[in-house]
Image (cartoon, rainbow, N blue to C red; front, top):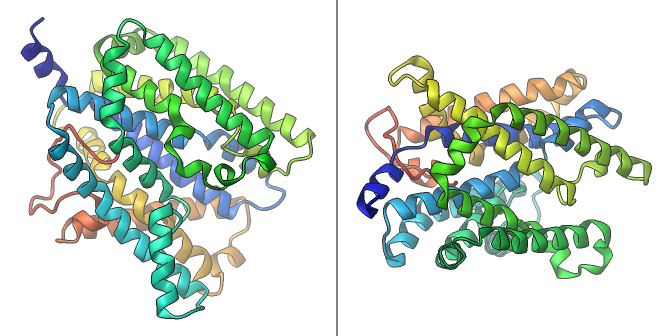
Length: 381
């Protein structure tokens, strides 16, 4: 097959990936809502939270997959690639870092304006303005490493299993160190989640999968049933490790930390499971149908919803003298908060998408058209 024909085939929009993106971001909101609303004895919610702790790994695998897939379809010099990518992610990152630093100040006002500026600069450099923004800091590290990632994938063709094994070894070692010997990790333990190498296996797995996208997606389509059983088996393993951690003395919350090695196995299973659902959807998608438009819209809005949902959660739980928490008992509080957070984040994103503030608030360029234009590249991931 000629290179030109191959690139034309690879440039098609992957509707499979839209589903993975939407499901991952929906679960991210689930993580944050559950962790902020579960009561001390809500064991079921903490077990659910444990099972939701795959989002960062799936997110970074998705990011690498889209980057390599889109770059192979439309290769451009890095002097053009980097500015575009950093515009679509870097600008929202800085703007939302400022919003969350101010929100934190309003919640606990202290210090001078100068102190606030210093805090903003530090938080922006470290991804610590709010608990979800490290996702974008790591994403930008992946962007910087794209030339290295592409070089590794191309140089190891025919031996990709070795590349994946090496990346897996690095991630298992780092996560084991963090989880089982945290007291010895020093600066790494403090900043582990903000460092791209913590997710090395999933970054390389996404890149390798993109390099074999046709064969990989065909395999997913042919093995959906097997993947379903794999997800179920890995869920049992994940919960088994959860109760082992409880038996070792961890709290119901602490037993489900996302920085333990078993999360790697679970995240692989979920990534395959989400992609299996995505292939099922893509095979049945009817262009122009209500469901197709809904999924297209959800994929387009997902980044903006991700950026704004913690702000909505913060307002719900701390505004009005904690009214929601005082009037809705657990575990219903989690469900009510989840629905309200999604509704609020959707509203913010919809308003922003219709204004010139669309780029800084949603990572999508403003357009007078209300329907999303199909693009190969949807930041981030």
